[in-house]
Image (cartoon, rainbow, N blue to C red; front, side, top):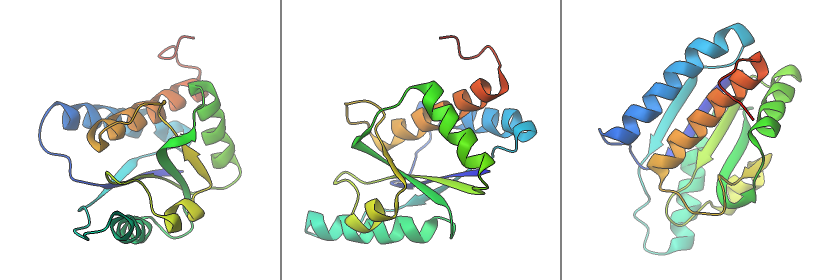
Length: 160
């Protein structure tokens, strides 16, 4: 199962990009034996529409266009469900085992996700009750995908 991160905003050079690259590299290496990975990224510019509702709609359409057809979509949103790392790993393993070939994580812009994307999402996931900038959210979801792979593999990276 391949992972995709479709996000509004571009990641500039710096520590966030380095951290994201570290975890995407780890996912590519550790996940291969489990038929998981790699992580691919699609960066989409923020909408320039004047109204927040229009920006959310435009960005939702752009995110959906960037996600492979047939992918299972997880929308990252502060109002989503929080799950433990173990539960997240179980979901990933279950989706892989049920034949999901592409799992896409959608990270919206400053205004959040548009209704079209939320309707297409199988799950809305929160990375905790706080709001995170898209640069950090990318690194967090990449780390959690890597952690899920280590949990599935029985690797000691995750010690609960």
